[in-house]
Amino acid sequence: MHNHNHSNHNQRSAISLNKIFMFGIIFNLTYVVVEFIMGFLYDSVGLLSDAGHNLSDVVSLVLAMLAFRLAKTHASKKYTYGYKKVTVLVSLVNAIILIIAVIFIVVESIEKIITPQSINGVAVVWTAAVGVIINAITAWFFVREKNKDLNVKGAYLHMVADALVSVGVVVSGIIIMMTGWYMIDPIIGLIIAAVIVFSTWSLLRESLNLSIDGVPSGINYENIKQIIMSNADVKDIHHLHIWALSTTQNALTAHIVLSDMDRMETVKANIRQLLCDAGIDHATLEFESENTKCEYEHD
Image (cartoon, rainbow, N blue to C red):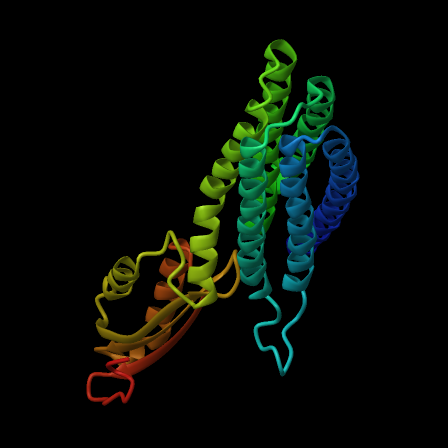
């Protein structure tokens, strides 16, 4: 009965997340269209750069929703782990999209610095202020689920960052209204680019690491080795590999040498529990006696 209720809870959570993703995509895409139009009409690089960033986030939301759905699919004879790795690829694609957006923002900002143009501060303020509200509302919808999935957390952080960026655009509009200093617009554009690079760098680094099956952040290879060796029946360990199945699941394979093969099942249960507590929930363990010569010993 408990498992049945837990399953129903997971199904309701998945349905809720799907609705949140759909709402966020439609809500933000509508705003991007309006912001692009206002940016072109009033020739504001601040609005255009913010719109470009928001458009990249719409794409990110679409990809995150796709990854979320694919990660729930069952394994097959061709894809024996299912499509869990898609979540890692999506993280990498999202990071690349953000870097491309930064290049666009920097180029536009430099052009505006070289050839400054007048801007309607009022239009900039009101358009960006709407963005603050939209991004804040979208982020709020992700708050409850953000700690359950890395892609959901990424979407949440993107929305929070966008809200802060839009605040910056509002500030530039107010300064233009009060002082007529149009140069603040491309300066804000460059600041936005710096914020995006700063917030994206860790995402890019970690997604690249996971895409080539590096040890996930938060998992220390030597610590994991010590956890396994802490069992009194374990004499040695080799062929130890740790990688990410997805942005939420880590896997491990290891060959473990035992002093007493009769205790294999007890040792296996103990090690798997310790690994699960350490953040590795998919462990494949092969046990060997001290007299066994393993061809993978030095891998």
